[in-house]
Image (tube, rainbow, N blue to C red; front, side, top):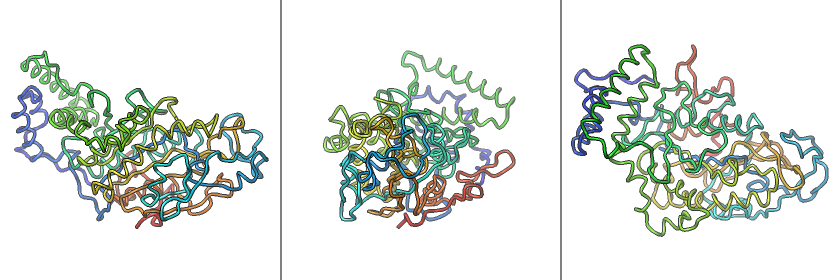
Length: 477
């Protein structure tokens, strides 16, 4: 990737705008200054044309924390029912105690053929199942770690190691945002708290700090401290910003090239622009009653997650490139982690998330946005075919399933297969780096060319020379 061009000599610097007390001006003056800046400058957020003609412009990642059970949701295994309770013929890799007997566990859920395509999805997810003809089901995913944090970090960054940029940060870096009043990369978590691994999952790593995921809330003010204190006089606000600008300049002189300082200045500018537009983007009251009901906003059990899914649609509609939507943190911070009972625990989290997830896909299609938006529904790994303490399932890194919709992926298509018991991906295997390479490809990006210099080498999201990442063309139209 080429670095951004230098600022034109006649372009007002960001620091000059801060010294002028931008946030203390009235709305009209503020808007005029910001329009002038956006017209004259090319910030890291500025939309960039991809190198290839892309079918998609944005991604919504419905991150299903905890490891959804493939053989209870997407990957029917009659052999589990046939040999229920008997020892598995292959010793499986376990993570927690309680699976030592290695006895097979039949799924308590029924699988039915769905849609014209006949895709097999269980009765645990009736709303998503009803959209089978819009979905790409990948049954042959695999990953590299059985612990939640490492597997979640891998799903986010392509490797299990901390400190790497997330896929959303790479997309922000490569493509920018189509809306200069909103970040390129937005995170929508449960307003009550963080899921397992928290903000590790939207870090910028060695990319400039402006490409870190920006957290927004779907409860109350979208972003804390966005509005200046109402009791503060404009002159005082100007003085505050002048002092902040002086401190930033002094620090930058001591540490030239500090991306966090540059990000701080960029974020002040973005905050000024968001004062004008962000609240409207997050105002779900503008939506029709039918739309609100579609997402389950009229029901307490689906309201919170439905608000996040609906907000995700509004964000991509407004030009945001990557939106990461996290599952509820109650009853657990990793709610798909069905160690105790795959019947009741799956029922609990499916009731919270199934309808809103399906509503997002339906709504995007109805508005003509699905073709240009990739919806990814995935956890970090799968579950074992043997029982844990009788009714639960332990972690399984060797196989899991995920869903894709829109963005040029095949509709009504099932890819890959696991063994007879769902323990290991055996046909059409897809790694996490493969998935990332394919997502970038659908956004018009070459996963081997989108790079950033770090510690003497050009780093990429997929590190294909090491991981062997490939574009999974079998999934694409």
